Image (cartoon, rainbow, N blue to C red; front, top):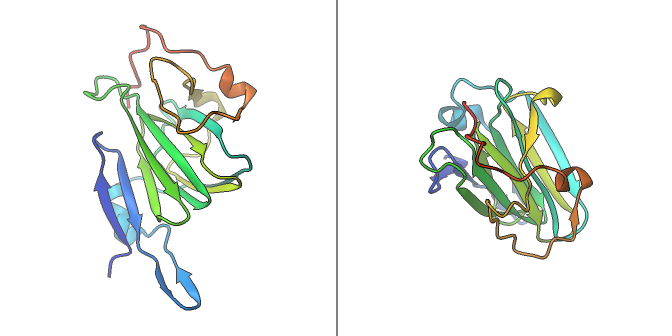
Length: 186
């Protein structure tokens, strides 16, 4: 029995993994990752870093972060407590969906994982208090390759579901896109 089904989104390469927990009166067991079942999705990459975040206040926005090549990464993002609106923006140079975005609700109750490949910016808004996320990364964090888009950029026009209550000073200071940005070569 497979513990995962994979769904395509409208943007090539951006996928949703539907996890299949197995439960009874005591609770459930949920597999977050299995190379045997997700190997085709991961390809020749390896999971090299796993991060856990907690965001305490509803309406908080984090993002839109990415790592530039050669440290670009695939991320598998799961919400294990609370509920978020998760967004990925296509930054791949020459992509027919360049600067298009896809948003997905992830929650502790819907067992969905957002599979975000290299060449995408990622961010989210908390829809409840005390949201916890687990991130599986295919590249280690490289501070010199870190980059971000401004989550409030009118060119992106992200329709955040709630009024934004918190946005870090760092995320507020990310530059807005201009016509010189041609994307990432990944």
